Length: 114
Length: 116
Image (tube, rainbow over the protein chains, first blue to last red):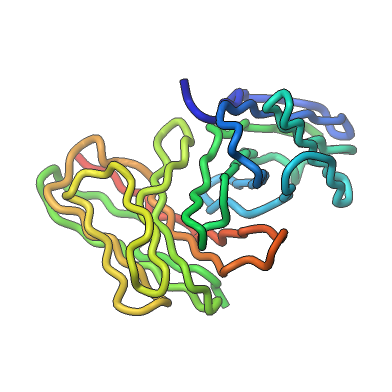
């Protein structure tokens, strides 16, 4: 079993839909949770970051962490065709300067149709 | 200006050859990484260097050898290439985060390696 599980999709939604992307994990030591967005043929870029449990909102994006269930989510409101990309969750136990390393999910491929 | 750059972008080579990929970051970061992304988009860390010192060395065949001549550069040399080495290799860099801040890694555009 992988440390981080993520449904690879693909997920196709109409423009304006609310998108829900999720990851589950097995390592209870994880406390840094991130969502990266990767456009086709590009490198991943950090979209959202959450430390420990709770919610974080940034514009149309909301990240949620439920450590008791070992479950994290990314919600995209009013989805746009420009949101079409692969979304990767990532998590670590410590910052890199304390020996931590990012463990990535497989990524969910999202397509938003006009 | 490109923050993290890699060369080449594409690399097609025969099995058994030796090849290198170069990475440079102009962000002033102290840590650099190599990741491998397979055909299923699974991204996995291979190595990390902090101020030219090897920090993370995952279970990677010793045909892969990273080299960091200075903290702005991290190169990856691969000996005796195999079919299974075909993947996209990403370089990344990051800075020591403030307490409670994101440990943000900035990724390069990737090098698509195809071994024939």
